[in-house]
Length: 241
Image 1 (cartoon, one colour):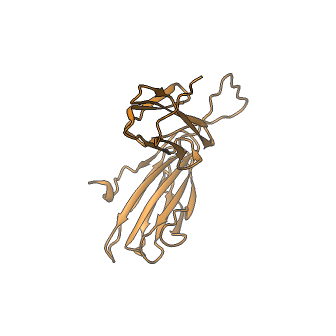
Image 2 (cartoon, one colour; image 1 turned 90 degrees about the vertical axis):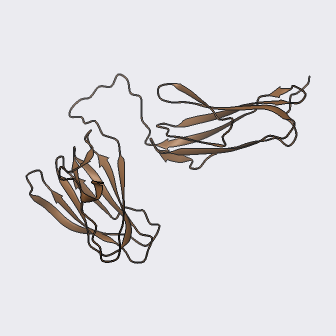
Image 3 (spheres, helix red, strand yellow; image 1 turned 30 degrees about the vertical axis):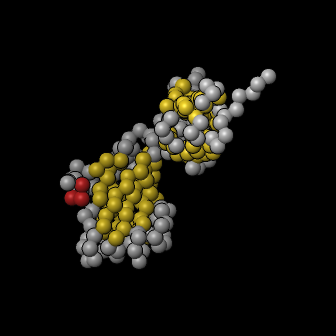
């Protein structure tokens, strides 16, 4: 029995995700090698996988990478049709697997006894601010549509450790607390420097203290309900343009 073989010098392999484990909805970047010699007269490639709702496939003949956002553990299958000058076609296939931490679940026949709450989707807002020495950045204000946890992330590419003032105000304008958040370390550190429990309807204001002229501010919102984190009615001056 003749066994079909791909032409010599063909490189088709190395299907690999950049991260083996991702959060639900986070990017999973797949890469692979596909180099065809002159003896190949036809090449076509398809990437396929199953989502929560459907089977998906994408034509990736001209690509060597693909980015997806899986919500549960996912197997990716990369198949190819390779035809050589002798009109012999082979069908090699590659597969890889991405594990999703805290995946979305399909639940049926669920019975709830007692109080229950639907959790919202985690959201990160990146607010990059770069200012000349001595210049103060305008404040950033957000209002919570539900109870949740808000993490403040500060990072800098320059010397020093930037810090910001953080004020939490109730809907009736009562000040719940005031504190200062300082970057954990130097350039490249993206760990949260402060996590604040925020009640529904409360407003959090982040103000520049002038301790660094080049830094980035990110807000990581983890809702305990379905409400989102929105700019306050008095729009931040930094977001008016």
